[in-house]
Length: 272
Ligand SMILES: Nc1ncnc2c1ncn2[C@@H]1O[C@H](COP(=O)(O)OP(=O)(O)OP(=O)(O)O)[C@@H](O)[C@H]1O
Ligand SMILES: [Mg+2]
Image 1 (tube, rainbow, N blue to C red):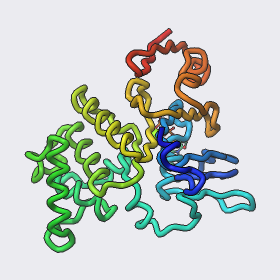
Image 2 (image 1 turned 180 degrees about the vertical axis):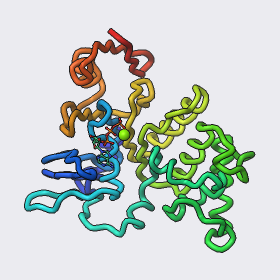
Image 3 (image 1 turned 135 degrees about the vertical axis):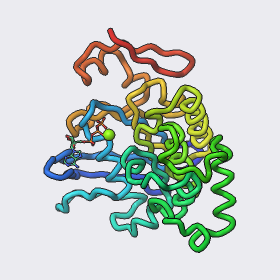
C-alpha cells in the first residue's frame, strides 16, 4: 500500500476539512463537515442525489469556499489560501459542469490543451499560447485515449462519450498529482468506461490521489481502498470497501432495497 511507501506523517493531507459550513446558492449543503483525505489516497464518494458530492469536489477545487468561522477551516495540501491557478495545476478534474462550460465549437485538441492553462478552451489561440512541447503532449494524450482522429473536430460534432474522452484528456495532459472525477463515465459505452477504468488504475498504481464520485459500484477500481458515503450533507459512512459497501448499509442510506455482490475485486449493486 502507498501509505507504507509515502510517509503521511511528513506531508499535509490533500484535504483537511474541519467544522466547515458550505453553501451552494441558498442551500446550506454542509454544516460542521469534518473530513480528511491523505495524499496518495484513493477514495470513492457515494451518496444519493443531492447529498453533497459535487459540492465537496468543488470545495476541493476551490470553486466553493466555506463560511469563515473560528475553529473551522478547509486546507488543501496544507494551505487555506491558494492562488487557484497554482492549485489547479496540481489537480485534474472531469465533471459534467466543466463539460457543459465548453463552447460547442471547441475542438478536441483545444479541449486537451486547455488543461495546461486550467482554462475552458484556448480561444483559437493555439499558436500563441501553447508551446510545441505542450501541443505534442496533447497529441500524445489524444492518441492514448483513441481520439487522435478527432483532434480538429468540434465538440458539437462528437458523441457524448467522445466529448468525455476529450475531458479526460484535459484532466490528464498536465500529469496532475490529483484527479477529481465527478461521474466521469456518464454517457460512456462499455469499451470507453473500461478503458477509463484501466487508466485510473494505472494512475492509482503510480501513487496519484484519486477522488472519484460515482453511482456505479462496479466502476470503483479495485485500488480504491476507502469509500466515503454522504447523505444530506453528513458523512454517514467512511471506511474500507468491505465494511461500507454492504447490502444493509446501502439499503438504509438510499432508502431502497439494494443487494451487493463481489466479483473479481469489483462490487455490484442490484435491486433486492
Ligand atoms: N447552484 C446551486 N444553487 C443552490 N443549491 C444548489 C446548487 N447546486 C446544488 N444545490 C443543492 O445543493 C445540494 C447538494 O448538491 P450536489 O450537487 O452537491 O449533490 P450531489 O451529491 O452531487 O448530487 P448528484 O448525485 O445528483 O450529482 C442539493 O440539495 C442541491 O439541490
Ligand atoms: Mg453531483
